[in-house]
Image (cartoon, rainbow, N blue to C red):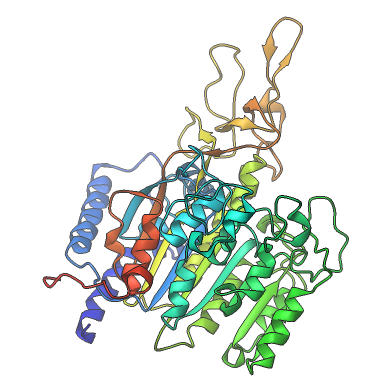
Length: 520
């Protein structure tokens, strides 16, 4: 593409992102509820100009870089509530008027999240879909439609393996990396590099009889392509990699072969002349000389990293998702000619939702947004495709009817006309806090006015009692900016995302078939 095409595209993105920046300045907003007709007409006109400019300025460049942001469990409801939470927390406005960074991207689509054999998905099959371009069966990683959960023998056949965007990028000469707040062997990152019929087979002791003869996910990361060729690996999960000296419990995946795969990874890289480093806390990560580092692995916890609201933010604590994203881009972007692929996962959004703790989930989403803004400040959007999406949603709902500006973590304005008790704006259709009880004459529920609904561990009422809240099955949103971002334009299958990334970057399945229309 001619260089003269880059400037107008970049200016378009700056204009589209401008509404994000006014939140940080001394902009004066109307008092909620006092906006007059002129306000709404001006807002509508502004959005219309953005739409007209966007429609006439699609970027058909080849994407040298692809950055994929995955908010695990960040459905539309969670994103909406987090948007309000963020604005209310910062005491700027009533909350409903705000935006999260990706909500100002020029292109948006919806994705269908069902898996081949389940209506409601899990994170292994969904990640396989958007990383490989083909849907899979529940609980499986990087395998085709013929392999179901626990079918070890079938999974050993390379003909049933699906290649991923990670593999396509590496074969095109791009540097690759991934960042997550979960274990680096957890479902989403594992779908980038592993072929496993069970997402739980993260270490050798989890294989059991059904997994006899299969390779655990941690081994595949360190020993097999494309995992072993990843330049940057940042997240949690010392236990599966045999790098922990901590005391495990029954929930941890602890190696039985006593191998320290992290040490083996490090020694292997150095043996081949690479300048490789292993870091375990924020200070070590942020002090890395990225100019002199070829390969980096950072494991900041024995299992998943801490929730953002609980994280030790000191030097010896864990880095933020933004910290990890920044370092990853600095290392990967040294590949100036071929570019890079980076996956960034806000993985603990999902866990907080499973525990029906909205505040913790919202703090994870805000941290996820910080990481995205960090990335946007470091890349050239004329040559970098950025996609933000979720793998699935959760069963949280936003109840009616609260007054505008009411605390999103608070209590609605009108009590029930059946039992005359108030209820929180946020509730779950199933989960842990199912506190309905018999008061001697009828089934009733707690009076939420007597509870602190805004504390981090508060769990709103659930309708159906379950020990662990479930995923939901509605479509999720995908947001895109950069080269070929306009390919996200309507309702798509979740597997379509991999095709967009491949076509945009002219790699993988579209390496020889990414011709742009002549009229562009």
